[in-house]
Image (cartoon, rainbow, N blue to C red):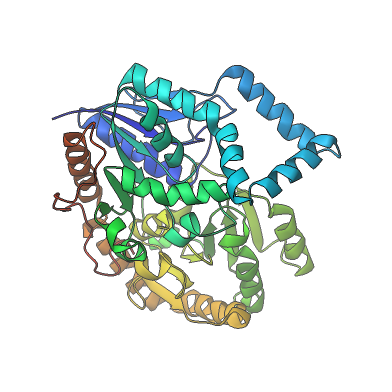
Length: 436
C-alpha cells in the first residue's frame, strides 16, 4: 500500500551534511516504491538541495517571503554593534527562565507552527517524518491544532544526549529542550540509528522507538590499488566536534617519516581560518590541504588510501560506510559514539584508545601504521568492502525497514497513542562492524 509521506527538515538548500543526504535518499527510495513524497522546509534561502532528487519529489519551503527578508535583516543587524544585539542577548537570558521561556518559545515559533499546520490541513499527508530537533517539536505542536491528523515518525540523527540533554545544540530555550522530550510520547514512532541509542531513553519512551541505520550505497567509481594516492582523507564540517586540530597535529608528528603522504580535509565550517593558521604554523601548507566542499567525494575516496575520522562524537557517520564501500580503511577514536560501532577494530580499520592529552600522539601512531603497512591496508580494504556490500546497512535492508515503519505508522493515522502493540521488526541487529 502506498501513502502520502512528507519529510520535514528546517534547512536543505545547498546543504551537504549527513542528515540531508539521508533525507534525500529516503525521499528518493519512497518515491521509487510508489509513495507520494514531498519535502517540507522552513528556511530563508530558496534553491535546490545539494543531493539529487527524483523528479517526483517536490520541495516546499513554507517560510513566507516577508519573514525570510526580516530574518536576513535581523541576522545582519545582530552582527553589528547595535541595539538589536542587546535585545538578542536579553532574549537569551529570558530563554533560561522557566515560566518566561515558554512565552518566548511560543512567540519564536508561532509563525512556523502555524505554517506547518496549514500545510498539514491543505496537503493532508498520511505520514510526516520530521528530521532532528530543528523540526520535529514544531511538527508535533502543529498537529495538535490541525484538523487533519497524520502519523508522525521522528528521525533522530545524533547520539541522544547531544539532541536531548546538551545545552550547546539546537535551541537553548528551556521550554524547547523540555518539549523535545515530551514530544516523544505523542508520536507514532521515533527512529534512532544504533541500538545503544535506544537504551539511552527511559523504558516508557523505548516502547515506540525503532532502530534503523543509514544505507551504504555501492560506488560507481573504479577501484584499483594502483590508482590510489598516498593520501589520508578526512570528510566533515570544520567544527569543534570534528576535532580536526588533533588530526592536523597528529599528521605533523609523522610528516617527516612519510614525506610522500598528504592529508586532504573536505568540508567547510567556522573553524576554517583557525585551521589554516595552524597549518601555516606547523609549516604544512604543501602537505595538509583544506579542500572545501565537494560533490565528488566517491571519486576522492577511490583515490585515497586511508580515511581518518577524528570526531569527538558522531551519530551515525555516513562517511565510514562510504569509505568502506570504496575499500578505504578508517581510523577513529574508540570512545567516539557511532565510530566505535561502525569501525571493526583490526578488521576494517583501527580504533585508537587514548586520553585527551594523548590523542595526537596515539592517532599519529595509527596513521603511521597504515601508511607503512601495505598488506594490512589491503586486508582492511577487502574486509571493509565485503561488510559494506552484504551487511546490515545495505540499501535494501534499510529501506525495507523504513517502508515497514511507514506502513505501520499509517495504520495508526489519526491516533495519538503509542505503538506499544506493534512488533518492532524494523530494528537493525546489534552485531558490530556492519557498515565498516
